Image (cartoon, rainbow, N blue to C red; front, side):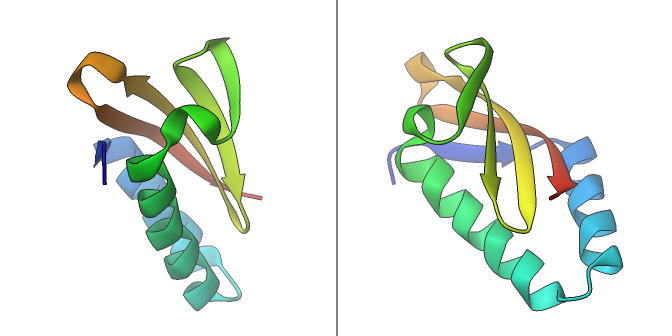
Amino acid sequence: MKYRVDWSAAAEGELSVAWFAAGDRNAVALASHNLDAVLASDPLHFGKPRESSVSRVGFLHPLGVEFYVVEDDKRVVVLGVFAV
């Protein structure tokens, strides 16, 4: 893994809400695990840019995430999570 992935407190809370509301909680758990792996390995090629190339949104069913990449620190910060 090349990047450290940090989830903001807000994103962790939103993930909990999505998990509790999900019809398939295993799918949400698997998606969050896979999101961690994707963001840790190649975040600048996942999802689409928002305001800049480092501010991005990505989807891995049944979740979507808003995140930004700090390339100099090899760090990804997940700002928000939502069900898709």
